[in-house]
Length: 309
Length: 214
Image (spheres, rainbow over the protein chains, first blue to last red):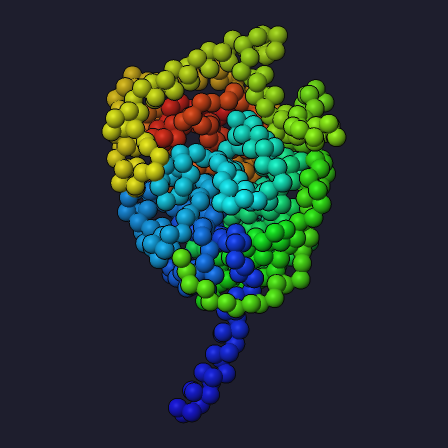
């Protein structure tokens, strides 16, 4: 019996290790970050994802995490911040990882002043972690003319950088419960195209979906870092890959004109991986993004174990 | 889609998009909805009756929300100041203090103080076409999406929006139609009703029942 167990373990182990292979190039000087969405629901799913993120950071030293909103479900008292955010992500916070939040429909405006969400008192903001890449956190709950004006100006001023927008409501989605946020799309997509936004990350749907590029823009949905809506993803012509059975987070790396991604579940298994390359020159256009992205073949695995910062 | 039609209509009357640098010399694009929204926002703030026939009611509304915003600023000091980079304990303490100060300063506030009968009439007129029929389907879906049951929200001035309840997203086309607000005020739609909320305290500042006529 003992031999049988040993044999079974030896058979399973290589599969697990292979499933946990880092598929990002992990290049020196690249922009390395992670993504979580709808992460503010305490429970085993949230803890498992947070633990996996800490574990993967040993091999892939991402510097910051983008949050897709619904950062704290329910109450937002001090104990809620602790229970729903600070405690599960303690290892990352202690390791110096910065979190950049966007607001979901379950989030109170008070979060904008929370030190660890780095929103600097603003419901929408942009930041540039390194030369060549700029992120735009949008408040998709309330796209009023003031925010619209801000976005227009910020994008216009961002030049040839990678432009990555993130917010709560997905402009394209195959979800049965919510689906595409058509009205937000009507307002945001034209300005994304005009100024060459390359990639958009969103949450709200409690699953993971990588969409086929729409008008040259890459779209990802990740709203399953702590909540799941199993069976809600109705794979459609929009879907490049989807999963509504696993809790998940995404690791991302930007190196030059390529963006690599690896989506990992609560057990550390890779659900999805690949890369996109931005092409073209910045030329304003009303129909296709100024710098469309092109899906690439999956990134070659280069497991390297650099020490975390 | 309603917003597309709305934007397209406005785009015809709007100036073309302003680009900077070389790009502006190379190509001129039609206005994006964002640029149209900016233009629309500028028009809505106008008190010129030639621009906006409901100017008097809107100017009155603007004055009333401006007074509220001024009061809020005056009260959001000392222990009630919400500071960037706070801890959760500091955030909570400041919010509790500010909420108490605002409630105290507005003990006499009544339903209709800001949404006066004239303003309510204009708002209903502005909202109705954005939500009607097939074109308004997306907006109605957003309002329903994750919205709390109206019964769970106290329609009472100076009451708190219930903690833990989702704040329903407001369709962008409604925000384009309504007068812009100063922070920390925001509109929220719950069921058929429109709330004016102080997002720093979660206090209900005023409301319009049946703002959206089915």
